[in-house]
Image 1 (tube, rainbow, N blue to C red):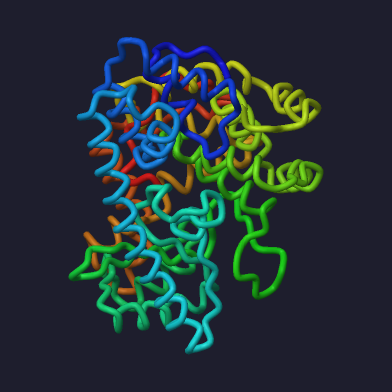
Image 2 (image 1 turned 120 degrees about the vertical axis):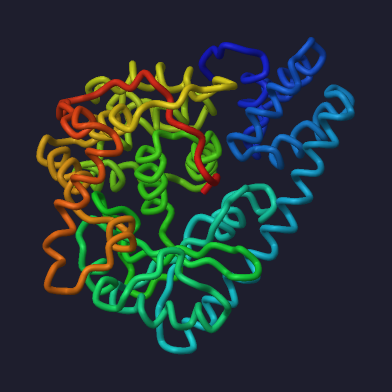
Length: 395
C-alpha cells in the first residue's frame, strides 16, 4: 500500500477490505491506539460508502480503540444499510421475476448482486439504485412492468421522443423511481455509451468475473474513481477468483480501453494491495502517464474536503482516459451536440423539429458554462489534478 497523507486515510484503507493479512490487523490496532481525528475518518468513510465495512473491521479487530460515539455512528450506518439493502434486494428479485414472466431477459449487475457475490453480505456494500441490463427493444415493455409496480419515469418522455432517445448512440439507460418508496431502477441497454461490454454467453444471468472486472474499471474511470468503494469492488474481485488477465488485456485492447484498465489496476494495487501478476502491473505502468496519474489521483481521493472541479476540467480529464484521438473526438461531439434528457424534457418539440435538439443543446451548454467550456483541447493523455465532486450514490 502506498504512503498516505493522514493516519485517518491509512486506517480507512486498511479497513476497506474483507480479507485482512496479519500486517493490516496489527496496523489497525496501532492506528486506533494513536490520537486520530475521528470525525475526519467518519467523513471519509461516509463519502466513500465504506461505513458498514469499517464497522465490521474495527469491531472485529479493535473494538475498544475508536471512541464510543464513532462506533455508534458506524454501527448505525451498518444497520441502516443492511435494512435498506435487504429491501432493495427483495425488490430486485421481484422485478426480475416480473420481467421473466413476460419473456424479458434481464441481467442485474452492481447493487445487491455485487454485494452478495463479492462480500457475502448484502449489508456490507452501500449502493443507491438497481442496475438492470436488457435488450434495447425490451425497454418499453420493462417500463410497463415497472409502472405496474409503482414506478414512474424520472424524466417522462413523449412516445416519439422516447423512441429517438433509445436510438441515440450517446444514451444507454433510463431511470425510474418508485413513487412511494423512493427506490431508483436504471434500465440499461448498454453498460457504457462509449465502451460497451456485453456478456459473452447468450442469456447469461450475470457477467463472468473477467467481464465484470472490465465493467467496473470502465464505470469507475468514467466517474474519476470518486468513490473508494468502487476500488474496493475491484480489489475484492481480483482477490476472489483467478483472474484471466490474458483475456482481459486482449479485450481491453480490442475495445480500446487500456488506459482505463491500467488506471484501475494501478489504483487498486497502490491503495488496497489488490493482487495482480508483476508482469501485468509492469505493462499497466508502461501505459503513458498512468503511473503519475495514479499517484496524483490516489492522493486526491483521500482528501477529507476535496474541491469541486469545473465542468470543463471534468470533461478534459475524462477525454484523457480514452485510448485514441478518434474516441476523444466522438465523446466530445456526443457531449456538446447529442441531445440529452434535459433538452428532450425541457423543449417538447414535434417530431418534424427534432433536428433542432442538437443546436439547442449546444446553446444551453454554452449559456450555462460559457463558450470557453465548450472548446476544450483534445488531449493525448490528460493528467488530472483536481478531484471530482462527491458521487450522488456509491453505485
